Amino acid sequence: MTEKTADTVEPSNTDDSRSSESDPNAHGSFGILSVRDYRLLVLSNFATFAGYQIRNMAQAWFVLERTNSATLMGLVNAMPGIAIISISLIGGALADRTERWQLLWRTKAIIASMSLLTAVLLTTDVLEWWHLIPISLLTGSMFALHNPTSQAFAVDVVGRERLVSASSLNTGISMIATIAGPSVGGALLLLGYDTAFYVLTGLYAFSAFMIFRVRTRRVPVPSSRNMFNDIREGIGYAYRTPIIRALLMVGMGALFMGMNQPAIPVKVQDELGLGEVGYGIMLGLNGVGSLIGAVVLFAFAKHVRKGYLLIFALLVFNGSIGIFAIAPNVLISGLAMTLMGLAFASWMISVPVLLQTTASENMRGRVMSLYFMTVLTHQLGWLIGGAGIEAFGIQTTLFIGIAGGLAVAGTSIVLTPALAKAR
Image (cartoon, rainbow, N blue to C red; front, top):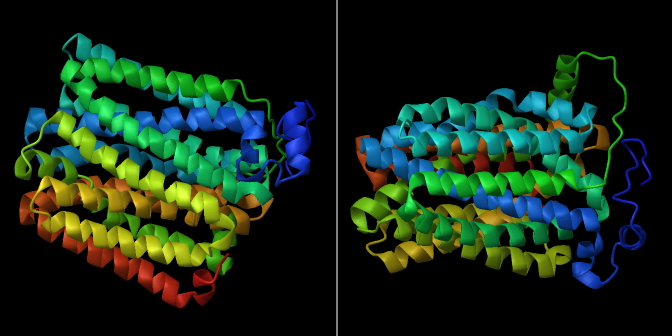
């Protein structure tokens, strides 16, 4: 394998990887799959996405069943987001100054160990709902280091010129996991919470192993600078770059958008009268919408302005939450969940891609850490939404979230006209 500096990284030493790098359009849109390391990255992300869905739904259902409290359910599932927001900047600085491959597989291995610990505590009938708070905080801390590194590493593997195709295909494949994960998770919960977490451990371990097999290396540029100076430099760079600043402001609206998350299990259980499998199917429909969106965008990615796509995502997402809030039956609720997924795919192929193609190479990790700090405020939506549901009910809480999300995102887009026209 040929190793280069951080500014010029080759994906691998295989012939198919090297030839596809020299011709970004080789084999058409699916030519990206000729890159060996990208295939491993996709498999790793598939397992991580499926695991994320199973963990969220298992924790939510476990706490709701044990406590009958939407607030406590929201508190537990907000913990990873709190950890990510707290230390994501450190993760971004590490992504820009360390060997990304090492950081990725090691954090995934620790995440798998936390799932194994949860499963063992469940099997021995020791686990209480509050035990999930420190476990979720540590899991979130690992994701705080993992997420910006993973995003930056994707560019190392495929290059900037194919990032849109790679992101679209990766989102589509990951959304298959988003469909399968909840559906399988619902069945696993019937077999027992510990079974769900043992399967989750296997998924995270598989994800770590796939990254371990990747050959791409990024040789970090030696730096004698203090890490906190790097963090301060990254914040200043993001603030001075109008499109990046606006995208991060849009990301702050995720706090309000996340208020819909605790409403899903509560509505499924209390209003629709469904159980674990019904909850899994409802989340699976969200994945169906995401998959449809990702496939369409993968086919037409070169012809779509990412700024327009972002506006579309915001309008459809908030509109579908409104439909879900007033949905009187399973059919309309399922339609709303599908539309939410469609909007999510549009978001994931507009915001992160715009950030990575706008940011300079030596700032990419820090910019992506700021992105995760802002967008993962949606995890706090679990806590705020859960408390709101107990205080005001599902409909009022969701419409408060819609108003807040549109206000924050809309203001950011209006104040930065270049964002709407961004390609």
